[in-house]
Image (tube, rainbow, N blue to C red; front, side, top):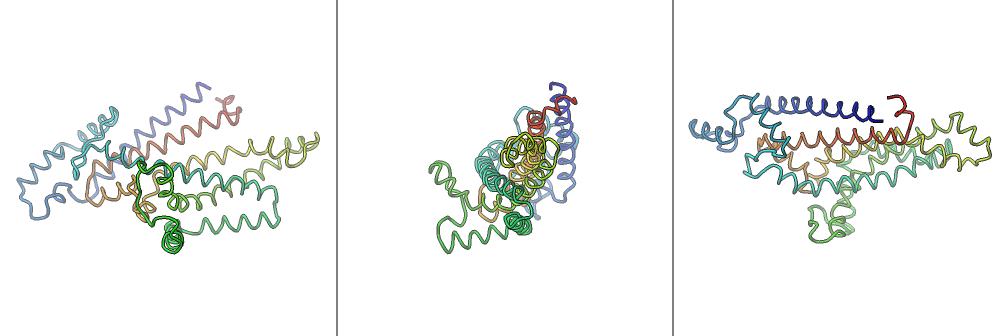
Length: 315
């Protein structure tokens, strides 16, 4: 087990190192100068040079990369060019919106998809299976931003059950905060639930055809008992993979949904920082999101070893 964990940990570190180089290189070659953007096209050259020196843009790219990585290792993500505020403070403020939104959406997605996938697999080829698979096909095909706008139209404008956008803040209470995130969470969750339900059904059908399932039935277990006692656990590995990827997507991929609902999350922060050429914010936030994706995948790999002991024995 220790060898398995160490191998995954080494892979995590190497992935983060490569990701940091790629992120820095891509953002640095993007056209535009933060100093010119902040001072305008008519700014004097000496003023531009002074601002570049103040922002630390006058050193070599290699030195800026080392300073950036070294700062992140000790929790210093730099200072925003545009707002002159520590990036760590900006991220912390926005994370209290994006992280609960991702967890809320993942909980909704899992609560819908797992029962739907089990229901469809238990009724393979029947009306229930066809209905569930038809619904999931529709969920995969519909863009989440269009679905988000339909939710606003129906539940915010027509029925007035929820607000059309914005976030009231957690100071107003847990219920008020969750209510503000409900429509965005549903818009994110349903397309992901459609994918997860299809994976759950497919994985469970593969397991139900295995020899050990027939052995369980031969020992007197009913189809339902065999499914719940033996089939479900063995079908969880591909489902855990998708859950890990979905959680990473929900954290890093909510930019459009946050724009639709005017949520002050990490997605909007990235969008605003790109527009303002605030490179240090873009680099740091994207690196944090990449770290979240890689860390989630690392935890999923560890979960595999607990779900399937055979993985521990192979390493």
